[in-house]
Amino acid sequence: MRFTYLLSTITFLLVSLLIPVSTASAFDQTTFGWGYKKNKEQNPPDAGEYGPILDKYNSFYVDKSGEKVVYFTFDMGYESGYTEQILDILKKQQVPATFFLAGHYFNSAPELVERMVEEGHNIGNHSFNHKDFTTLSEEKIKEELETIEDKLYEVTGIKHTQYVRPPRGDFSERTLEITEKLGYTTVFWSSAFVDWGTEKGTDTAFRSIIEHIHPGAIILLHSTQSNADALEPLIDELRKRGYVFKSLDYLLWKETLPFTF
Image 1 (cartoon, rainbow, N blue to C red):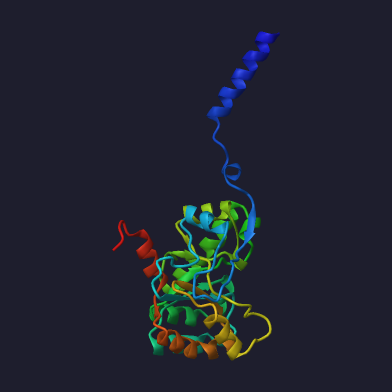
Image 2: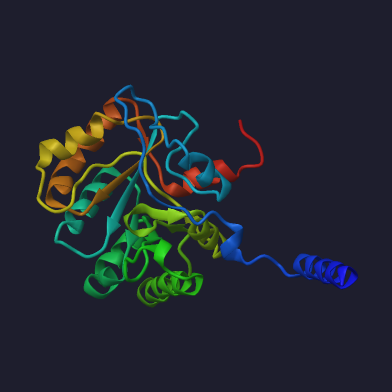
C-alpha cells in the first residue's frame, strides 16, 4: 500500500513538471486603475508599485531621461466637434501628437483619421468597444485590437499601430503581457486632469497641465472645447519654458537604442 502511494505521488509530480503552467496562472491577476502621485516641483510623478510592472512589459508613462520634452496624446472615443481645431493648432505650431482612437471614431469621422495620418501624427489603439481589458479573455482583447487595425487599414492603408492605451487606464500584468505579445507598446500618461463630462473652462485646462508639467511628460487630453481653446497658449508657454515637442516614436527610439549618448 505504501509503495503504491509513493509511486502515485512520484507519477503525479513527474506529470506536473511536464504540463506547462497556463498563462493565466503565470501572471499576477491583480487589476489596477492607472494613477500616480502628483507634485508641483517640476519632477515626474511617482508611479509607485506600478513602475516596475510597466518596466517588465516595456510600457511607458513618462520619458525618464530628464530631457525637457513633452508628448501630446489624445484619447478619442468619438468626435465631439473640436478635433479639427486641435489639428489646425498642431499643424500651425508644428507639434506632433498621438491620437488613441476607439471604434466609434472610425465610423463617425474617418476623414479626420485620414487628416491625422497625412499631417504626420501617430494613431494609437484604444480598442474597438472601449472595454476594460482586465475583464476580457486574451482572445477578446486580441479581437478588440485587431478590429481597430482593420478599420485603420481600411481608412488609411496603415496595417499596424505601434501604441495601445487600455480604456480608462485599467490594466493587470496579464493584460500588459498580452498586448506586448501582440506587438504593441502600452502607453499610459504622467499628466492629465478630469477633462470629460462638464466643461472645466480654458483657464482650468491650461493651469491643470502647467502646474504639474515636468521633463518627459506624456500628456493625456480629450477632444473638448476647453482643451482645444487652451492648446495654443499651452504650447506657447511650454516653449517659453524650454520644452520641445516630440512624437512617441522619439521616446520608443530612445528606449530601444543599444547604447546611450
